[in-house]
Image (cartoon, rainbow, N blue to C red; front, side, top):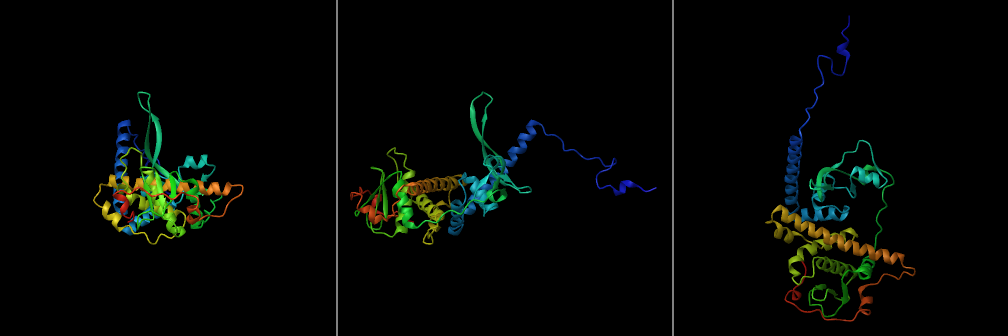
Length: 323
């Protein structure tokens, strides 16, 4: 008589399936804590890698320009795990957006924010370690490629929707293309520069202005490196030539910082870059929605529209705001 148990692919009575023991609440909490600590150790290592040299920082800033808005820790993780990703959401977020994740796709580790209620009934917010999926892993029509704009159109967009006043001035200090003056919340722009130089200069100073909380203690010099990097991200986002940027000095400045401080620097860059991008996007939208759209204007056109003013000269104003 044949022994049929030899033909069975699954376990037999003699080999019962071993069930995983259920974890107690305390054991589960300890396991999750260990997972979080391990992930934060990895994030610290990825942070240090970004500041290894100018090329590494450039690569991370390129990814920041490419990817949809994310908390800085997720950008670090995605830059390592999904360098081609552009737009990431959780499974449920894609469902809410009308798309579905394709079967068999593996998500990317991320810190995901969540709201919860404390034991005393008060509301709080935190995060959990979960997975996000790139838009390329979902079903549905893929997003259209972003339109390409000329540099003078981007300059027009900045003037159209700038959150701080822009004034064209012949009195900008020598060697300075544009300068944010905190005392009157105005960006003074040198006239007769080419459109790309003008965009980069205004973007840098708009980034600097975004750090001013108007408490009278703003220091332009304290945010020079962050503003420089933010202008790079904005320019990269819109396809401008960014080959002239160099980040070696920024890396040298940040190399001695703790990982948390380095992430704070990157987070400041990210937030300022997003501010500039929103300004450009809204300006472009206003231009497109205009009933009688005007041709893109260069800064020379705006020179005739603005009253020439002399920016207040301070100790910092006499130095070029460049890296």
